[in-house]
Amino acid sequence: MSTSAAENQPGRPPIVINLSQAESLCQLGCTLREVAGHFKCSEDTIQRVIKTERDQTFSEFYAMHSAAGNVSLRRVQMQRALAGDAKLLIWLGKQRLDQVDKKEVDITSKGQGIGPAGVLAGMSLEEKKALLAKLQAGKEGQGNG
Image 1: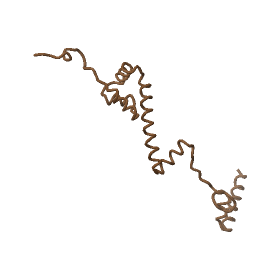
Image 2: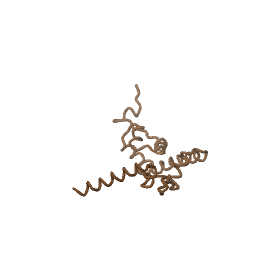
Image 3: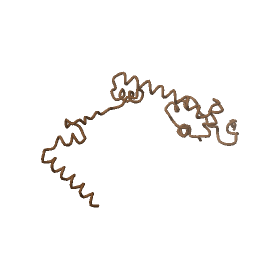
Image 4: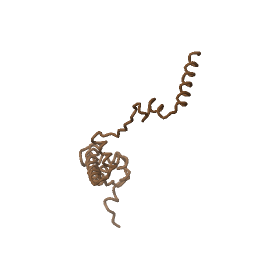
């Protein structure tokens, strides 16, 4: 009966980390915990392999490869926006061009919009008199406190 060299070595078999897969996971925005979970190993193992194989910290590795993922995402967003996706065009305008939604409110005395002039314009003469009496009664009640 012959045994292989791997069977004669004590301890756990080495975990193989495919760094191309790790790069792809980082492009998707996966965290260190998620990358370790994918490879069924500890976060320390991922960090050690990246340090040994690439001479980088996980943070450096992640920053480089997640940036590539961001570029791909922006490219697709821009393509969809330019193809006529109105919601995406609006969102990109707000994000990149500091565009905002403005809601204009007319508060002139013409009775349109909000404010005292707008509220009073929609009231009948009797309603205005009742409101005035109510306001005056409230002022008198405050003075007697």
